[in-house]
Length: 264
Picture 1 (tube, rainbow, N blue to C red):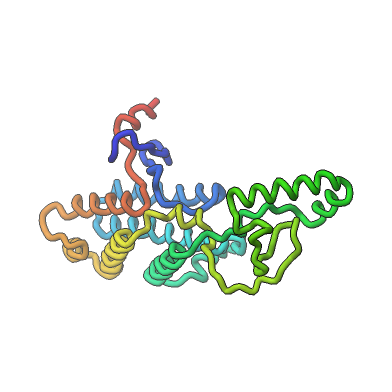
Picture 2 (picture 1 turned 135 degrees about the horizontal axis):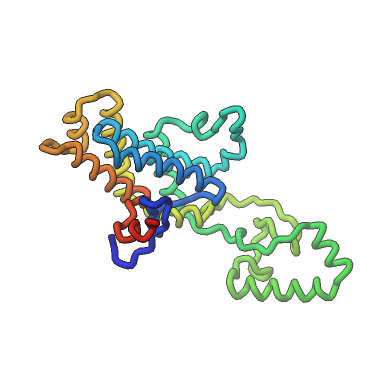
């Protein structure tokens, strides 16, 4: 762990790295934290290789499905009373989810940010009200808006406006006829910048061990899925899994000095 690295406490014993990959809202971080803490504690306490691997995989599976669910806003259709969660009902197997996430990120990273996301927007009714009731302000606002666009986003200024844009409230609505594609959400892409080629390689390594664990109770054969054969396989696999949790989603055990500081 790097010195002076900021850690975000999730519990008295578990922290999240400041640069941990994340894409979600404050509304679902509590549920995510609950899953992570329960699985992490089970791994720490367990002496069963099969349980350790499966609990580690459950954290990653939840993370991947949560990211895809938040990207497509699937939670809008969930119903806790009916025990209906669309990310489990709709999304495919873990391997296919992983392939889907990797493909989406590859494509989105190759696209430019959509300039239309920087448009100054107000409701059409409010804009008509300003134009009618405060014409001087309306005129001044158009001047300020144009200056802002020319300085920071020249492609949005009236002087360089393409007739393919759906413009802000101060401009007529034009039909979008361009086939140009832009990144859906730069914040989403930036928040998952850690998910590189090595990340997906480690995720598949864990999934391979999980598949072995799902069909075997033999610790030695499960350990071999990690490329390990030797003594103290349980402790070795536990440390391997804790290391994967750190590398994949940035969850780590709270440093001892900080844990002592949290003690009453």
